[in-house]
Every structure is written in C-alpha cells, then in structure tokens.
Amino acid sequence: MRIISGTHKGKRLRAPKNLPVRPTTDFAKESLFNILGNRIDIADTKVLDLFAGTGNISYEFASRGAKDITAVDQHYGCCKYINATAKELDFNIRVVKSDVFAFVAKHLESYDLIFADPPYDLGEEAFSNLVNKVLAGDLLAADGILIVEHPKHLDLSEVLGFFELRRYGGSCFSFFNKK
Image 1 (cartoon, rainbow, N blue to C red):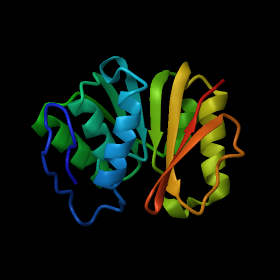
Image 2: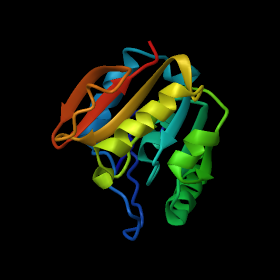
Image 3: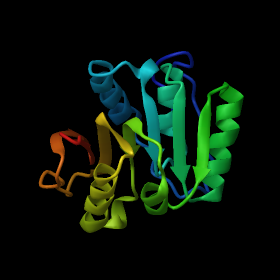
Image 4: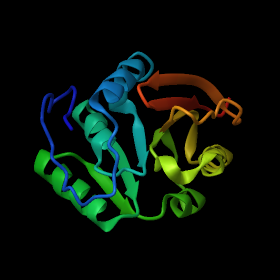
C-alpha cells in the first residue's frame, strides 16, 4: 500500500501479514480522493475512518492535510499498527479500539466525512444498519458525507440517504448524506 498524494506522496507502507484486513486498492483510493478533492477542502475536514484496518485511508487524509482524523477498529494489532505508523509519519490520527457498531451508538462527536470499510462478509443487513445508525444520529454533520466501501454484488441504493455509486474493480463506494 502507498500514500498517493500530499506530504508523504509515494511513501510505501507494509502492514504486518497477520492483520485481518483487506486494504482499499491504490487504484480505488486514488479515484476516491480525486472525487473528494473536487467536492471538499480536505484540510478543513473532520474525518472518521470506521473499520480502519491498516489505516490506509486515514494516512491518505493526513498526508493531504486533514488535521482531525479518528480511526476506529476493534483489532488490537490494527490499532497498534496505525498508532506506530502515525507516529512515524508525524500524523495526528486519534486511534480508538472499539467495535464500530458500539462506537457509532455511543459516540457524541460530529464529523464532516465518515469513511466505512466493513468486512465484505458482513452481509447486506449489517451494511444497511451501519448507514442507518450513522445517519440517524449526530455522528455525521448536517452537510457531511458518508462513504461506504462494499463488494460490487451489494446494492445499497435503496438505503435512505444514498446519492451516488462509484465502481472500481470488485469494490464499490456508495455515498450518503442526511439531505
């Protein structure tokens, strides 16, 4: 995995092989950030990375200037790796070790952009529940964007708040808002 752009452009990162992750591909990540670069000012964006895994998405936001990033994952090894990498790269990423669904249910802060990359085998109902829980509370700012990465066979277009789908190989990004 590598950082596509920003202060650490081209930096290659190697996560431990024993982490239970499926990092977003560089191609999909680059495409996603091209879209975001045309829609938001990343430097002024408060970001929440759910199911953070290796921290791949968090590092990209940090390299591009986002100052407030929270990465949530329940796996101790993932959290340890994100903390170590953030320290090494001097990124201000707050890491929270928690079950994402419990975090979403209890957390009181609000974010401009929430990125969620759940395990693909969670099933359609869990993906829909995640979106509904995020949009029902105050976790997402009124004009914020929720992006959910999911497998191409999963259709989230009927979930309340859906407004766009982008496909990249076997992965898709569904975009949601509160409007």
